[in-house]
Amino acid sequence: MSATADVIIIGGGVIGSSAAWHLRQDGFNGRIVVIERDPTYARASAFLAMGGIRQQFCTPVTVQMVQFSVELWKRFDAGMAGSGHTPRAWFRQRGYLFLADEAAAPALRDRYEAERRAGAHVRLLSRDELRPLVPDLVLDDIVFGVFGPDDGYANPREVLAGFRHAAGAAGAVYVTDDVAEVTHAGGRVTGVRLASGGTWSAPLVVNAAGAWGGHVAARAGLSIPVEPLRQMLFRATLPHHWPYRFPMVVDPCGVHWRHNDPVNAGDEDGIIVAFTKWDEAPGERFDADQDRWAREVHPALVRRLPALSDLRDAVGWAGLYEMTPDHNPVIGEHPALEGFVFACGFSGHGLMMSPATGKVVSEIVRLGRSETFNVDLFAPDRFERGALVHDAATI
Ligand SMILES: Cc1cc2nc3c(=O)[nH]c(=O)nc-3n(C[C@H](O)[C@H](O)[C@H](O)COP(=O)(O)OP(=O)(O)OC[C@H]3O[C@@H](n4cnc5c(N)ncnc54)[C@H](O)[C@@H]3O)c2cc1C
Image (cartoon, rainbow, N blue to C red):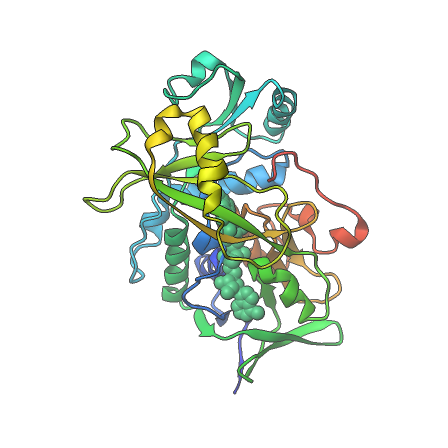
């Protein structure tokens, strides 16, 4: 089988599907083909993510991209409805709170100032100001908190389903297959060859393959340092319906949690918890270490919020962060291969940036350059040039 498209998007996760949806929203009438090898998305990062959305970064373009995205998050469920799926992404704008103890205070204060300079809406809160936000917190060792009131979290699976269905309803064609090769001739991309044997030709190909963005680059003969890194999450049931809702709370030790609100009548109230394992070795692993809950995660939570001692039914799972050497995404056309556009390697913060990234890809495809945001910093060849982007607020 051999067919033709105007643009091929490799990977139909949140980035690829947002790009397809934005292209149609922006009036692109060409044939959009999204090649996604697993329509169940069982291993897609978006399917397994925490859903945190924050503008607390030190790089102005990142802040701008999240601020743009928040405008879509606020109307996401309504905006993506009417496609055969009514999403319940439920963006909860409950804020994102980083707590500083004595040891963490100098770095977090510097970071707060850099975030403000970058344009982020963020506030430094005293202990007294923190209390009403999360009344049960132990604050004895806390010096201050940094709070992003516009931040919050959304249900990642519903974000994925919302973008996916809306892009399909807008006319993007989803093909279930594995891209085995990105074909090119004379320094220009020409299309893709599929594992099933078929080929698609197109003048533009987008690499939205998430943690597999490096593999897909290699299939075009290019080297891009995107490495999969396992990240574990735990879900647990609260002992009773909690009298208030949690923002995303980030403890100085690294443990962080958010509410997991009941969805249907009769569902119990819960939380989702992460505790990044800093010595995790890169690699594609999806097994969760269930023992970590009792050993490390739950004790750290209880130290900060003793009322969480009676949590029940904790269950862990794991997905992949898609890490680059500077923990920032790879966005833009590759200078060595005309028409091959990158939008991958978001290093654990791609869900929150997916609306703005879709817009960027739409502009690169339609106009040949990104106009709404200057994403030059994230260029695919920055690693070879040694032009890494350092941001103290990336994971
Ligand atoms: C545990 C965890 C917690 C996270 N928490 C957050 C958070 O709080 N906030 C946040 O913003 N981000 C978070 N992230 C990161 C976020 O999930 C990712 O940055 C985001 O999903 C990236 O989207 P994507 O579309 O690039 O990748 P994915 O969602 O992984 O989609 C990529 C798709 O490409 C497909 N694909 C790959 N190779 C091929 C190929 N050769 N052919 C065809 N298809 C292919 C895959 O099947 C996959 O469906 C978290 C991630 C994890 C794992």
